[in-house]
Length: 143
Image (tube, helix red, strand yellow):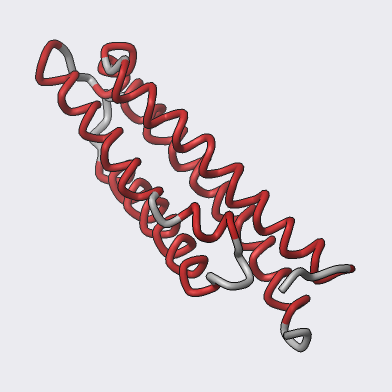
């Protein structure tokens, strides 16, 4: 059922928030899978093992993102999947933060690479959650 007014705007905001994070994530997937050598140094890796590790991270990103299209297509209908995406984003943020907190001194490049993921995942979580909660509130009694 198509929504109009504030409910329709909230649904579109949720759709666009999830789409924004999805597109950036998929850009990372493509870059990590096709051109891993450009990223191995940031993770203190090199050679074939480094390429394989970075490609593996790219594949993991792709796996993580298979939930997004349903929410992007219809966030109001696929609310449960929206909750799953938010949970995945939170797991990533907490996990990355934990990894950074356990990193010994002297790995500044690695720490900055992890910090970029923390910043992006935190911002993505805030963006998607804000739009998702707005949609939930706007559509609560409009079904």
